[in-house]
Image (tube, rainbow, N blue to C red; front, side):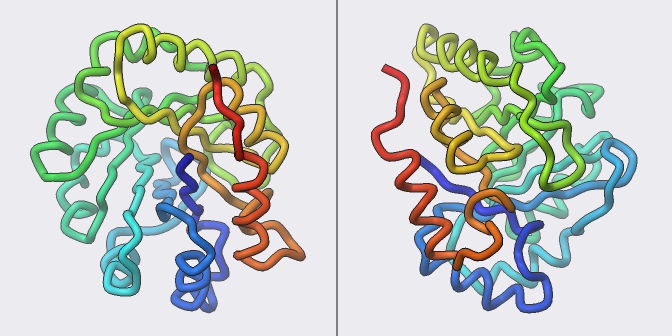
Amino acid sequence: MIISASVMCADLTRLGEDIAALEAAGVDWLHFDIMDAHFVPNLTFGPDLIRNLRPVTRLPFDVHLMIEEPIRYLDRYREAGADWIVVHAEACGHLQRTLAAIRDLGARPGVALNPSTPLSALDYVLDDADLVLLMTVNPGYAGQRLVEATLPKIGQLADRLAEEGRNTILQVDGNVSFENARRMALQGARCFVAGSSSVFAEGLTRAEGTRRLREALEGESRS
């Protein structure tokens, strides 16, 4: 199981220290939510933050572009240090071309789906994606309530990937609490974007939050 800690939920007043604490706690990746205030109603980081943080840690950077027509900015995020670049099917006029461009830049491509977007959106692009991110809340803000209808959707995608013999990583993002993470893992999720309801939970250190999430996921996988 992969834990990708959401930088949006970190303490931005001491981000370098927080990333060091996350690395020491044993998270696997760092997740960057990039928002443009058009595709989603919020505005967050640009490539400069990623570039400045790249020397601070060896953890892979999982960059989630919640922006319109992300193909315009792929080279900037790759040059800044992105290892994974995930784009939304809903935001791309030419999704396959965008995923191929990510791979051509030397990054690992991923495709994200909003809660109401059907899995059929993946029909002609799975060969081009190393990761599929299923949003389990509507994107834009941390701390939202889980969209329960996304749980069977995780299971349906996990079944499809298994039937087709794919090693595609199934990532989930949105209210990944300790209990919800367990439920998502039982449906077949393999990578968990951890935010304010787990790794960054109030009252817990980063080590405690990460340990509790690992414990919640221990042994929980779809047979």
